[in-house]
Image 1: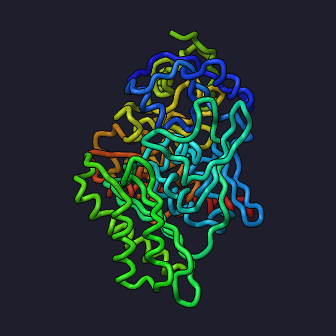
Image 2 (image 1 turned 180 degrees about the horizontal axis):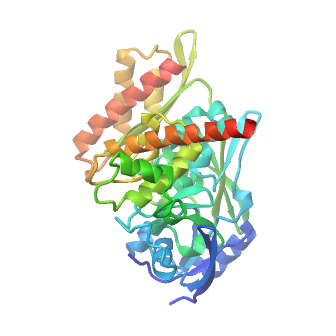
Image 3 (image 1 turned 90 degrees about the vertical axis):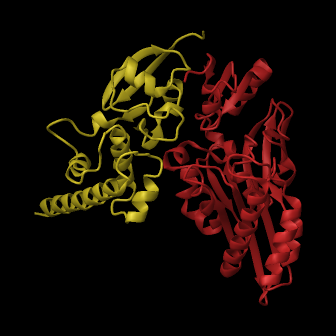
Length: 284
Length: 169
């Protein structure tokens, strides 16, 4: 499959990217690892007359852990993330999630920024970022701004990012307590039938705080405050798990596709969330 | 049609320069411009891994990379891993353990496996299966591929032990 022709750019800095976006407007798109965009271009479902490759921009790379804050550059690949010892120690849920994305070859190329910016409901990083209450830094012609991951996703492939802005980095507080990213997929490389990101802190044998986000069960990731509230003050006993699942089921809105009908997806979502909470609680 | 770009690649230690459209995929540039036909086009949708090459130290699916992205890169294909008469340990091991039947996926399998064993020299069976999950084989059922890679790992480790002993002597 051969995509439509395009002009290719590989700027050395973000200023160069912004200038190209200003010049070409809707006809230009940035590309990180390309493993979502290139297949769409090959199918000719995406037409990109001006393709801006971000691979040479050093400012978009790197993972920093500064006191209580973790910042991940948009161009950090899943492979780099998995192999970063400091990050794996400070926020192990990142590694657990990234290991469940695609396959080894794709993880060398696929990036954290691309996974978020694309706004694909099947991607795993959006839900995880909502679970961690991450802040997304965008840069545009008017300068930089920060948007909470919980406010960032508007609809499938639609986000708060303007066409002339690029995603620079994500940052979040070092998470405390137990964690789990649980994902049901048909095979390696598939998107989730259902996935859940859970962080739980424990004080005196009870849940002190909880954060829960679900992947691929709506046209945006679903951060379920109701599910988290159902756990707080409990010891994650069976009744609490049931209440959390019920609250989550009230927040998701899956559609039927080749991964199954709605009833099946809701069933899988409940099982996946139960497993994720149980594992996070065991680790808390 | 967009203008052709001047592309430079180092493939298997040899420098190549040619003109290509930015939209040309790396796999087609390798096969059709450089006549390096070891990497295969299987699914052409980044699922099967038959087109796997090593690019700047990463295992990548060359059907999902524009040649423009690879401009300036160092690439290793199956041709750079072994040659008829001078097979790599992994190639010998695939032959010995029947790690292939039709052989179509094998260049990608072995190219990926060389990188996997570089990163994890002494893998468990689980690590081999997880590390090879981006490569699909429709003949073997994977059992013999896993066996081949585990056996090659032991042999490569024994070889490097021998080298250490020799170096010490």
